[in-house]
Image 1: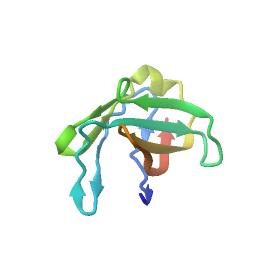
Image 2 (image 1 turned 180 degrees about the vertical axis):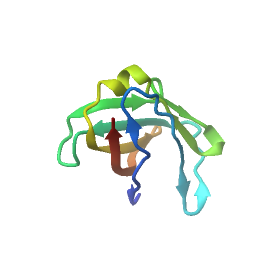
Image 3 (image 1 turned 135 degrees about the horizontal axis):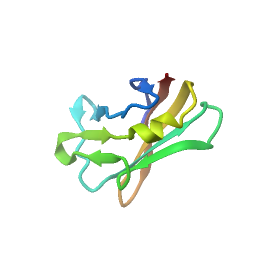
Image 4 (image 1 turned 90 degrees about the vertical axis):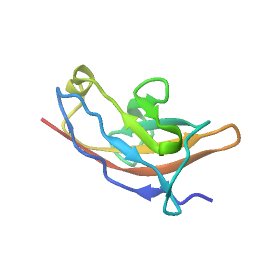
Amino acid sequence: MITTAHVNLPAIKRGCSWDPTIYMYVDGRLKDLTDYTATLTITESADTDDAILTLTSSDGLTLGGTAGTIECEIDATTTASLSVGTAHYSLSLANSSTTDRYMEGSIPIER
């Protein structure tokens, strides 16, 4: 069973591109993300499942295989449309047999 890590991500500045890299560690080692897909869902709060933005392995997320990295990218046009406040996110990884939520937390959205 996977324990979901609670990690706050760097702020998104409206009108600017957002491109942090997430390093996925499991049991103190970088996780091999080969054969995985990822979904990062951003919602207005932890109390809702209604996504304001979703990034996937085919749109906005790049998985680094054995390097254990997930590169995120949201363009400036998209961030400009987000409302200022504190959003919530969840990051799930899936392979052929399972889907697990690995991380969740908050993302400040700033002017």
